[in-house]
Image (cartoon, rainbow, N blue to C red):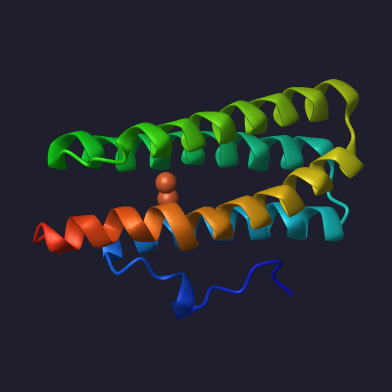
Length: 136
Ligand SMILES: [Fe+2]
Ligand SMILES: [Fe+2]
């Protein structure tokens, strides 16, 4: 069973970002799956890299829109992204250094909580702003 089941309540109303959020959810689910199946470390590390890369890419993409559309709450949203980026990178480094599956599971649980909370609050607010500007 996937860890996170996508639901329309998570939709931010813009397909471009919904698709990116769905992809993040899929990567988190894959990572979770790989633990449940007990696959070897290289698979887990590969999935972790994918998660880090895609998270960085996704945040960067949202941030391009902040600048392009003059989003007034840019500063706070960028700080949230930065904090998460740092936390994920720290987790990744400890997981690789210690080879700790428990830590990797902790990361996944934390990410589920963080990502859904962030989508439901800051991302929805930002996309509402974009929609009011006519972005579709
Ligand atoms: Fe987002
Ligand atoms: Fe965001």
